[in-house]
Length: 227
Ligand SMILES: [Zn+2]
Image (cartoon, rainbow, N blue to C red; front, side, top):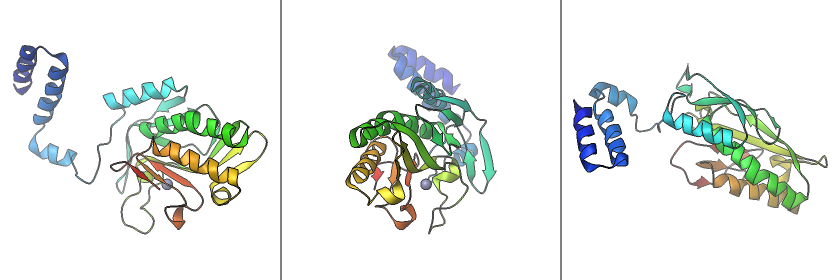
């Protein structure tokens, strides 16, 4: 009934976009009140499942970046830990050590960061090609260090980057390079800046001692946190 009323309004307005917006608003209104309360927990941002339109859009973008990946069934692991709308990222433009399960938005931004942020920065600051990115992984069902809040790693919604291997054999680690030689310092800060344009939260050694040896990127929270 509600959908039909909305459709009629939409047609009379004659704008397909408005009709679509109204349809989605009306569909939301038709969820019984009890279910709606369950679906909207204010502390938890929306998590898009593997069958959602958001996931399909993300997967298309990930493909357009040249990535090879496998969509994974939505899973809940207990303790609030989940992997919704996640992929196994098999290949991007550069080899990556330690790639695990991650949400599609993390995979998409990571692939774009590697391609458009890290590879050019290696050429600019070291004059050589990037040959590998090393990570400390993605999914990990745990709380944030020093807090009781679930880490975005518990939602497969974060990735930790530990270092970079260059074509001349040099390895630039976050641990040694952050306060290392001038080129390493500049390179690591440049790739952090590039990550801040893509991920919602970026934490580096500048944030706290828990991040002295890696860069943390996630797609949780409100966004705009870059330190
Ligand atoms: Zn992390």
